[in-house]
Length: 168
Image 1 (cartoon, rainbow, N blue to C red):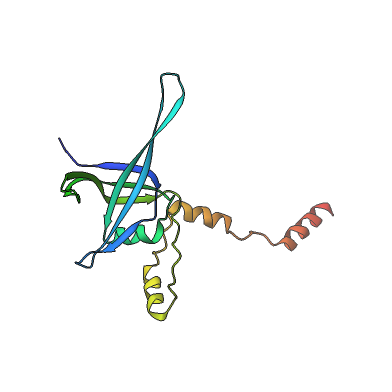
Image 2 (cartoon, rainbow, N blue to C red):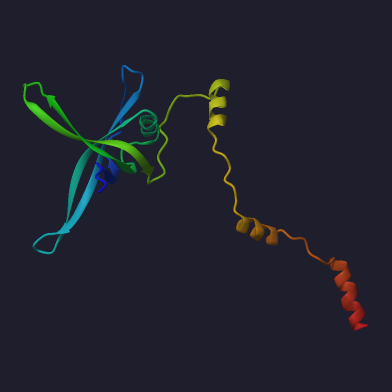
């Protein structure tokens, strides 16, 4: 049996992501995601139970979260649960549950944060290099496109002459 630490959360951000640069130079981002559970109480009324989750991302994923997510963004995150022990300011031992993000999907398209970054020759080259390759079309699509793009087989003038010849 394949046993795996796996969690999938879909929810909204409660605040803008908090990003720091670690001593190693790697970026780390912390998100707070709210998820809802819906149920009916004993009176039959619909109730909502909101749960808050702490999600951490590192490296390129942290950069993407920092660039595109803002408070209220809807995101789907896949990762693993991690439990971290720490000591608070009163010398009490605490346990915190965190999700370490591995994959994600922006469900509302992501919102680009406002930045003061301007296009220069250097970062223009980076942007051009980051453009995705165009997708290859399949054969079937190519045939369909070819059918709609065919030129007429007869000239309009030839058709008129043929009709006049039949009438005359």
